[in-house]
Amino acid sequence: MISTELLPINVAGQWRLGGGDAYESLYPANGEPIARLKAASLADVDEAIVRADLAFRTSGWAQKLPHERAAVLHRVAQLIREEAEPLAQKQRLDNGKPINETRALVASAAATFQFFAAALETLEETITPSRGPFVTMSVHEPMGVVAAITPWNSPIASEAQKLAPALAAGNAVIVKPAEVTPLMALELARICEAAGVPKGIVSVLPGKGSVIGDAITKHPLVKRVSFTGGTTTGKHIAHIAADKMMPVSLELGGKSPTMVLEDADLDHAVNGVLYGIFSSSGESCIAGSRLFVARRIYDEFVTRVAEAAAMLRVGDPASERTQMGPLITAKHRESIERYVELGVSEGGHIRTGGVRPHGAAFDSGYFYTPTILEGLTNSARISQEEVFGPVLVAMPFDNEEELIAQANDSVYALAAGVWSRDFKRAWRLGRAVQAGTVWVNTYKQFSVSTPFGGWRDSGLGREKGREGIFQYMEQKSMYWGTNEQPLPWAN
Ligand SMILES: NC(=O)c1ccc[n+]([C@@H]2O[C@H](COP(=O)([O-])OP(=O)(O)OC[C@H]3O[C@@H](n4cnc5c(N)ncnc54)[C@H](O)[C@@H]3O)[C@@H](O)[C@H]2O)c1
Ligand SMILES: O=S(=O)(O)c1ccc(CO)cc1
Image 1 (cartoon, rainbow, N blue to C red):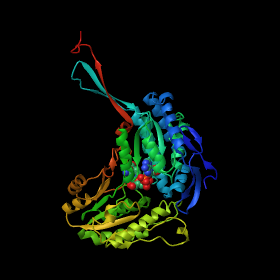
Image 2: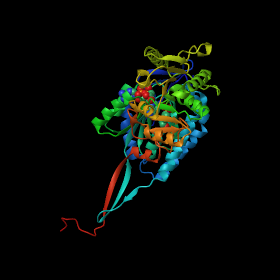
Image 3: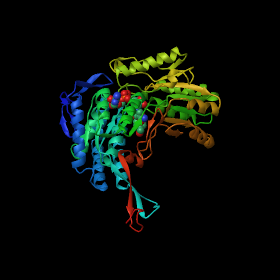
Image 4: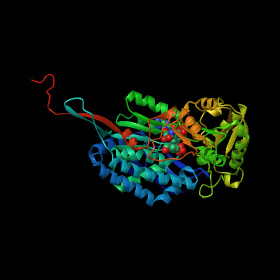
């Protein structure tokens, strides 16, 4: 247990107990409580947003010069790095990911603050070509209060990805973390305050999405929602946003295809496929959950992937040797088990996995074995729906045309992988596959300077990259008259 005391939440700079129901955050590896807190109430939501709006207008945060705000964000990055190990351990407890993964997420959160601090300092507004007796320019203004709604699967990284550009842009930010993983957002708010972000500019309101997230989205003072989570929730938020004429960005689900061609470096591809689906226990939006393998090498390749999957070290997230930890909750594991049963009822057979691991070490946590299904087509429900767990569907293909048709036959279009030594084929497939991100001869690599987002049901808008900061700003075109030529009605 991190603390037996009820943890305070952050209502526009006031650290206090939430007004909602008390609940416990559980360690997915053993189901034991690690923290207790009270969720935000609807009154907390309203108070946080009204006070955030006041802080936006009066704290001076939005008026700071870019290099001054950037200095604060650089300090946030530095403080995250100074506290990296305790943060990683806390996130391990909150979310159950293996410690090596939580360390990488903490490092990426620091890098994200550093990147947006640098982006802010070097941001250029544009003077546009004039077409009259005036000087024209395009500038950007902060929006006011913006909301960041995040899922449970990569807490500190998802929150940093929204908080850093939104703060860089000069806004006040309401963070609504997933109910089951509230700790990292609270830690980031504490660090932002310590680094010099004025009180009231960051709030953290944990609680049920359908209540707290909904109220935040509908609030008239909230000028933008940046949402990461499931597609159904994202569509619901998009409807609310349409009614408010509010811009949204939606980072949603995926069912990403990985394509392995006959000429691929198979050692490399086996590792890439395993990492793509089984890292983070498959609880990853970009999990490579549909594997298409050239028929000529299908048996050999899938045998190698299945043998390696069965050898993955599933277990204690605290151990540096662990490759796959537990799933997030007992309920989520049940949903994955139902998907595997569905796959079997649709005609699939389990090549490996498909069970809970046995042994005392696993009894009270939410563990599941790396699972591969074969014998299914791309139109099976388990090939079409996001499982969000360690379940791979493997399918052979006969030619490129059929491969692309199947890879693109999905409501999702978030990511894709291509494995081939033939540059021309890899280029052709990489350009033909419909996805927000394509990895060629690698998978699940990220750079904060490269935009990320999905097509179709995988989302709207892009995060990261220098342009990511503009999501949180309104654009303004300015015309400066030069008085060289009178307006038509001049007297
Ligand atoms: N594309 C990406 O970048 C990306 C990254 C990570 C996860 N995801 C997706 O997230 C999903 C898993 O996360 P999840 O189960 O937490 O998703 P979710 O949609 O259930 O919840 C995400 C967040 O939205 C909140 N929420 C729920 N209902 C809401 C409502 N009506 N109004 C406002 N907020 C609401 C939740 O409390 C949580 O904070 C998967 O589909 C995964 O693919 C996408
Ligand atoms: O693998 S995930 O944790 O789902 C994830 C989160 C965010 C991003 C965007 O940088 C990519 C993958």
